[in-house]
Length: 268
Image 1 (tube, rainbow, N blue to C red):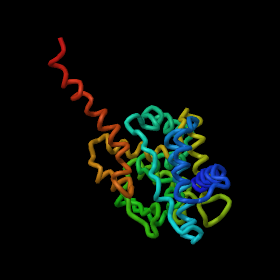
Image 2: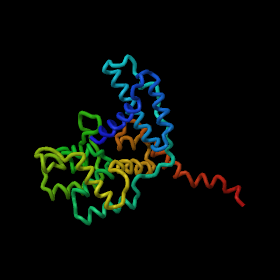
Image 3: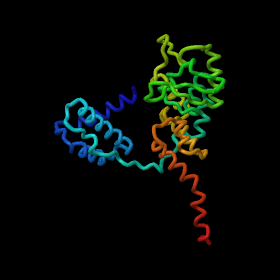
Image 4: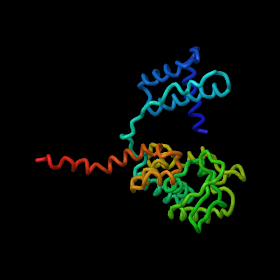
């Protein structure tokens, strides 16, 4: 829902800019130039706005409104990646878990484990069902992004302990792991999950969104020296290219000693 809302806002920004301009092959080029000249938004936001505009044209073509697909006339903005930092620091991670443990909130502890140690997306978390948990083999079948069938993931020992404590306390033996209190037989909404984690962020001084935990998950795996193909298997990204942003930053940092040493012989 939040993604849909974001794209609708971005698409509306394009249509308001376009006004009565003819929807020909040059309008997206002009829109990209308009976005490039804006100093009030980041390159990442510019790409979001441009992607929404391209989607508008792609759908108009698919619906037969336009005789051509103008979405292919422009490419995304190139965004630098080397400056990016881990969105949640180790100190903030520890602070968030301490916060949940002080409250003795087994649900919150489990949520944080699923986000940090399993790298699950928020939609994947709310879809979890008790029947798809195998505590003996430490596995869980989840409904991944864009998939119609469930895929098996391996659970970290801390996640297994958090699941056991939570299910025992709540006496859950079947159904959704995070059932809705209002709608029996359903799970909590993504918005409800978002608020639960955001409340932790506010309490612990974490400025980033709940999705940032998944980025920390990917970063931690790469930091261990795990190759990108294995990291991709754990994160379930569609391509290794999507992980390159993490790898570039962490790889450069790890090679800094070699970079410094290369000039040692030239020092007095």
